[in-house]
Image 1 (cartoon, rainbow, N blue to C red):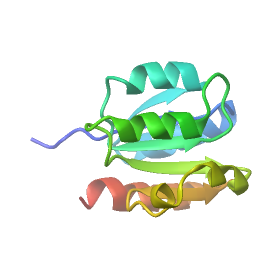
Image 2: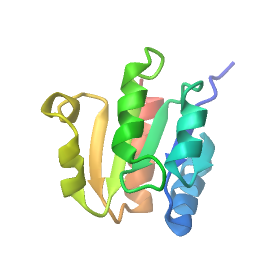
Image 3: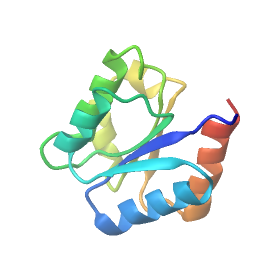
Image 4: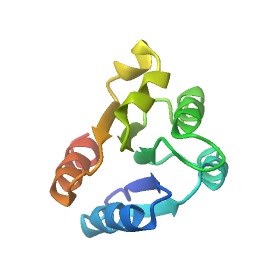
Length: 127
């Protein structure tokens, strides 16, 4: 039986969150979508997705705070995180060791559907 792959999209821009979610669903990934940091954080405290697509500038909790919480839990410490941001300088809040981790990519918006499709395939299906 094939493993079900899951992703969490945390993006407050409804248009972008729909594009990201639809792209992931089109390649067979189950997607949970959240539009603010608080509800995403509540879900992620008990979930172990294969991939998290994370905006940095979010209402209620920042993407950096969510990233730190993910890394604290053993179940999500190695989860792939794609940080997508219109302002890559916001990623400066991450430490050098966090930026150098093998399971983190920081992408500048806009992220193309093709780019997301290819990255998701490589990160999730080629484990």
